[in-house]
Amino acid sequence: MTGARIWMAACVGAFLAACGGGSGTSAPPAAVETFRNPPELSSSKGELRARLDVVTTEVQVDGTPVITTIYNGQYIPPVLRLKPGDTLFLDLVNRSANPTNEHYHGLDVSPRINADGSASDNVFVHVPPGTAQSYEVAIPSSHHAGLYWYHSHQHGSSEQQVMGGLSGGLIIEGLLDPLPQLAGIRERVLLLKDIQIGDDGRVPADIDPSGPTHRTVNGQTNPVMTIAPGETQLLRIGNISANMYYRLKLPGHTFFEIARDGIRRAQVVAYDELLLPPASRSEVLIQGGPPGTYPLQTLDIDTGPQGDTVPATTLLTLVSQGLPVPARPIPGMPAAEDFRTLPVARNRTIQFIESADGNTFYIDSGNSNGPVQFDPARVDSIIDAGTVEEWTILNVTGEWHVFHIHQTNFQVTEINGVPQPFTGHQDNVNVSFQPDPSSPPGQVKLLIDFRNPNAVGKFVYHCHILEHEDGGMMAVAEMQLPGALASARPLQTPRAAFANAKFLANSTEARLATLRTQDICTTPAAGGGRGALRARGPAGDALAPVAGQGLALARSPSRLQALRVAGMLPASAGASELATRR
Image (cartoon, rainbow, N blue to C red):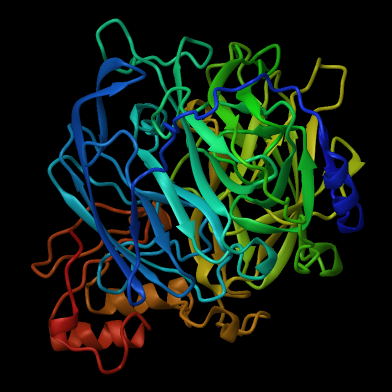
């Protein structure tokens, strides 16, 4: 781990006691804090109900007016705060001129359409202009506590929409619960977000990731954040930008990382310099240095000979002032499961590939298709639920890529041939470039956990540089019950671990066969495969396909019974519980 060291609890006290001088310069005696956490919406009584209106309007970013598409008229929309076991009910109302959708990045939740026609974390859903989509996302009671985020995942437009402002934070509470020694510390949420503004006051139609951009923290430019000497604070740092990398440096301070990508670390990792690729999150402890001012910088970025360069800048200024307080000991972390102790069901090799001009992007998923661009109707990897797989990610291009997979997380076991110590799990990882054709490709080796029954269904894996994802560097995975085409079998993971998961007891094909008997779904067109399925509305009208997963529910008694048999409604469900998909 470049720039990192595993923090051994036995050494912490001595190290902190020895920390005396710092490189900070004298600060004014009473700096005024201008940093602000983002606005928030919090769950109550087990649910959070929210509405996001996608609107095009004018806002000020870094003192510059820009006409852009954002949520609820806010460049930084509310952070959604939930607890494990809660349910998020969110209405996405598209008042813009372009289709959009919503993705709940990092959540280990269902990727399916719910029985009532609402969507869970299904990125195959599209919300046309002038329409709305209801999302109902059930958070498992065993879900990891930490920082996540939500954003548009409209393929072909995700870079433009996220760059324009369609991204926000999401927190699952409870990160510090097993760390009582940190109770009551100040929590800061730092959402790193940049926007390019053209001469016409809009986000450019053709975004250049190396071009001039406005980098902000919660929409603010270089705000002042205060800390007392010795004070311990929790910084929840999220990169919610479209393409931007951040190399964070805070002179005179160490980042003690206790969670990565919303998942508590197995042991604290200390960084002098913290790399956050696009979509990555890091929750760190810092402890105030001697009185003075300290710039939180993002250093120069160079993503490779075929990639992009971005100059350094200061994101915020930390002012250490006031009376010193005793430094809290950096805690040891609760034990976490090391995936290397589990059997591996399958090995796969996934390659990131791009054209010589760097404008066309492919994924080779190791099957007979070879390098291909994204096609929502094609399944690139079929995965048995209840298993752990080893994936080797190869980058045969001249620039960095970022591997991300939906609905689950993984353990990094090897980087460029070097075994990695076990420090925890994550959902996002940088993959270094291939220096030249005679050199080995960039490589990371991952153990990916597919034991969560919530994830049965279709989802995607892709490069999270959104320019690359829009350009085709994305593929479809389908997680099925083992032997799903023959009969359903129990999963290895006890269902009790996912107490409120809406588990699909029957195979997808068996369910669809049941639904076709009542004309709720059409039979696939010849040669169309499962992606050609069309849902039927109550009047028999064909609705737009949603990658074979969108269903419109009718109210006739025979159709109700078909839905019950297919396992999509409880046996007691009546017509009043049904709704057609919008």
